[in-house]
Every structure is written in C-alpha cells, then in structure tokens.
Image (tube, rainbow, N blue to C red; front, side):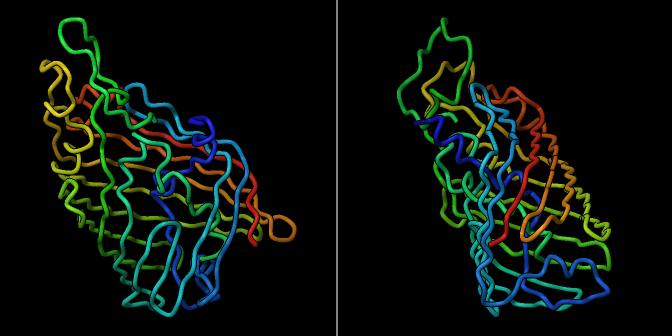
Length: 295
C-alpha cells in the first residue's frame, strides 16, 4: 500500500516554481503564455520519470510518475493545485493575491498528503515514511533517530499574500505565509525571480529563489524533544534560516495537446535544519522528464 501511495506522489516542492494566473494576454510579452482562461477548468496530466529527494533519516525518495494539473480561475477567486485564493489586483505588470494552502514540510513525513498529489506540470504552456506514534527504543542502545519512530507531525494550514511583478521576459514573486491553524504558529517568506526564453515551439525558464523559514516552523517539523520519546542525547532545537534554490525547465510543444517537458531543481537547506538528528541530507533535488497532455 505504501508503494502505491509513492506512485501517486508529486509534490509542490518540485514546483517551488510555477503558479498560474488569470491575466490579460499580450502578444508582445512571452509571459502571456502563462495566462489561464477565466471561468474555465484547466485539466492536464503528465506521465514520465522523476524523483524528489527526501532529506530525512529513513525518508524514502519520492518518485514522480503521474502528475495531475488541476486549476480554475474566476474573475477573482481561483483554485490552483491545492491552493485556494483570491486575486485582488491584476494587470499586465502587477498582481496581488491572498491564499490558503497546506504546509509542504509535512510531505516528507507522510506520502499520503495533499501536497504529494497535485502539481502544476504544464502551467507555462498555459499562463515517508508513515506516521507512527509507537515509542522508539531509548537508552544507550539507540543509535539514531528516524522519522518512523518520532511523534506525528500534523498538517498546518498556511495563509498568505503573494505579489507579482512582470517584465517582458521575466517575473518577480514575493510571498509571505503564516500558520493560521496554530499547528506550529510559524511563518515563511519566499522571494523568486524567473526568466523566460521563447523559440517557436520551445520555452525555457530559469528560476532562482530565497526561502526563509521561521524558528517555530522549522523546529516543529525537524526539532527533537520529549514528545518524540527518544533518548535525551538526541534532543535538538531547530532554528530559522534562509534556503536558496534554483530550478530550470524546458518545454516543447508537440502535436495536438501534447507537450514534452523536463524540469530540474536544487534547494540548499540551512544549518538550523540540517543539524537536526532527523535530517541526513543538506540539499533537496528534484528531476522530472516526460510528456504532458492538456485536456
């Protein structure tokens, strides 16, 4: 059953990147290709091979095989692959939205998570372990801490605002999120810049990001304390920090509604997280290549 869940997995982390928008088309601006039709469902699916690395101890890498793409934009309200939001301002240069989504950090602890099911795989052509509460073996014989024996990390509902600034071949995004569910009461800040190149049937983009995560957020997921029922020598207080990331994607329009796409991303984790005994990797990478169909 766990393997079936993994085959369904595709997470928002791969898409640190692309959010769509309902915006006015402009033939002189290649970002017009990211715009979505108003009051119409955008349904797509990608089939291919890929993986997202899991930095946690005993955390299995997440295979990317089937990636659904589900979005709807009204005049103001929108739903985009698990994000529900409201668009307050939109023109050719500036946009501002407020939104709700689920904290993506929990996806590394449990494959059956909404953030592991939906992913905007073709937006540019249009605009772990199980939760186990059983106590671990503590004392001198315990050699490590695993996500399979720490306490459950719960979902957090994040609410935030995102600003867009569009240039002819580029887009800036700045988002600020806060835990509205009081799960960890943490915050996250995300600043990104994406640049596009367009050829007749090929679109290429490069994106760079700086992501800041607060102490409350990082410590809830990656800190180790009495609630985890492990030896006290493993207790750890995680702290806030910046995580730089870079992503590149390539898409080629094929016949009909088919598109070939490839994407690769890399995210460096900060020491306040990687020094945790739950974390064994200092980076997260993802790669995917396959074919997407837009219905």
